[in-house]
Image (cartoon, rainbow, N blue to C red):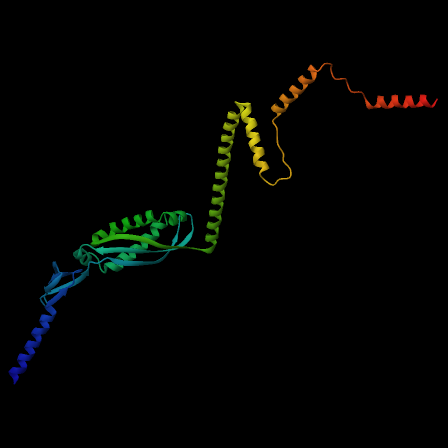
Length: 282
């Protein structure tokens, strides 16, 4: 009976040792194995054997980790207070370095991302934070990747998610944008006027080469005006044309013979008529 219990205990101990010794690692996992406290090898994936009480192991996940960086208070270069948060994507490339060179690499990357986010954004103005996010993301990624290389960690991407601004700054930015749109509208209007003036000058030069072209242009304008329901039509004539017409009329009057008599004053006619009336009464 005693031998039976001893055998059962021995079998149980063997099963426990086997359960401790046999480890199964998934495809995305690696085991950093230490022999009596010294680094031995990186094993996995699949079935591995760990000698109890002599070997120990640390599991390392090789998948991409998505790290949400908490909101950070940042003062931009133009003294604007904003709250910024971001997301960092990284993965372990060297399991040995991630275990030996740093303690809890996830927390280390998180703290480094927060400090880097504040330092990088503090060197830029608010307009750059809002309009040049791609460049800022690239700068933050390069700094993080440089510092985490010794930890066996590769930062694959950094994205700034939100840039929260106070209501007062939102109103100021809206006014600035409205003023910028008004400025662009005035510039475009002025450029249009300049181009129109240049084209009108070219058209005037072409019309001045032939007097009939000017007449045809005025007739076309009269036709366009007559097509509308207007009660009054103002048809302008150029001074040169009216001068030519007056010259023709004056030359036509001279050919008929005799110069036009000078007009008499109204006062003289009235005095002669009054004298005639007095003589009639006498």
